Length: 311
Image (spheres, rainbow, N blue to C red):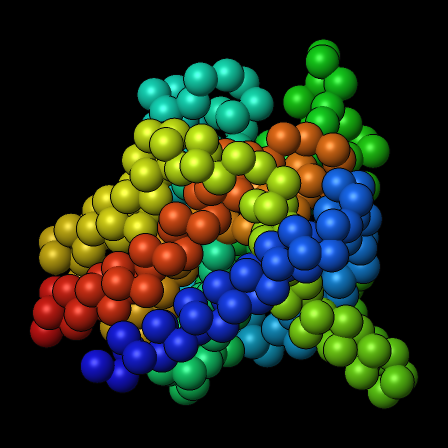
């Protein structure tokens, strides 16, 4: 019951912010370019600050040595997830642009905001281990997925140097260097980075609501692939992992952190990044709404089944 209430509370908070973004866009009649401005603020300042803060605090030699099983599990998970997402996207997407969006949504869940909120509330003793498990996912996300799947590239190049050297990837590299070397950071800089990072999730929710206000929601919610991807992301992928656990017993803590990543809804970068580059976010916004709303029921269900499998 505690899992259900916590998840429902988090979902309610998310949808309150999404609703606020929707109302502001509709009632205040903001210009359409407002979403582009907000998305650029998120992708060039707030998101890099969150990434920098996470890597400075968690990518340290001592933590990696003590939690190498978590990091290795995260690495294996992200590689398998990407391969699986590419396979499925050939059946769910109707063009190359949507195929990239589908690959991203299936390979990368909302492990950052939703995942950390659920784990820090329900399993605070595992929170740092969870962040270590997520580290390889963060690295793949901002060194490959965002530049190649969500940013427009030259026709003859899958990933341009310009896309690779994005603020999020640069922030990750700086965070890794600071974390590994223990380079001292002035307290006011650390506080500023941490404060900006905490603004990222609310700003992303507001932006999602603003993007939804621009689209024909009735038309978008009739797109079958939105529901197919949500079911795959929220139910099929976690169940495949639970089936694996029924055969091969992982360490309980490692398995719990892993299922907490896999059970989360679709990642919201699929809305934020394309919007910052002026791309169509209709399908991505629809998937964000459906998957996050559905996760209020699926996350408690998956975690309950997990406990049964691990007994």
